[in-house]
Length: 334
Image (spheres, rainbow, N blue to C red):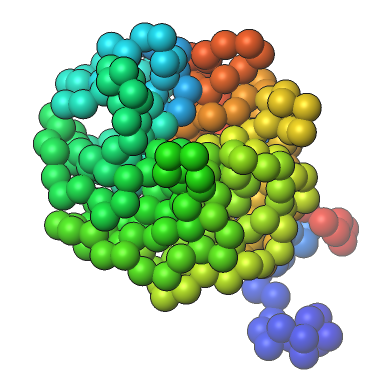
């Protein structure tokens, strides 16, 4: 015990019942059962959730596992589906009011399913499939068109909340872009570019002050960049290179990236967690998917993957991620 105090600066405390508000790595002595215990993060896993009402891919998504929203998306041969919106309550999806403009490959910014933005994309109903700088705001009931971005983009990424958001990457005509814009609740300001232009990427973060981007659609790679509120820095790569992810949630120090496509153009099940420094392989998706929607604002303990392309077509499946915390007995001293 004296060695433990010398290393950690505190003694191991004893309790008759498990202490309240446990944190990961906490150690204590259980006087009732006469065992030493510690709090350890269990292995996360995906499981089946409620199906979407409409199968779709390349969609706008945001929120949490119990308060998620998806809107827009393909397929391109069904332009009327590009306006449809669904809310998730942790069990099932419910259709709500449509967006004003149908679009595919938009991206979402928001914390819960009652407030957020759907940004960019391209018009499914236009013969030219024109790219958009359009932004629509959702208030929990209906959509309102608000201030456009400075740059048109589709297949980019959004991060943050309805009052502090970030838009980065995406496609512009035939080329990918590195352009980044900050949303302050009413307008957009162009800020520092990413180091690598990319489209159809995965990204996440809870404000315009920090975010992370990885994967892209034009090449199979593992490049990861971190945003600090001012500039992008290239950091440690993903363990498995892929493209067309779309699936990712969390914060800049605790996130999850999943799905995508390999160099053989096959959807994959890979999932990796980010701890602010490096990526660690996690238990895979139940079904391989790419161009998938995601929700998990605030961290990587829980979230979901919805829709996407699985096998040869659009998916309506929801896969829920849960990363439990477990108390584990370690030493019996009877």
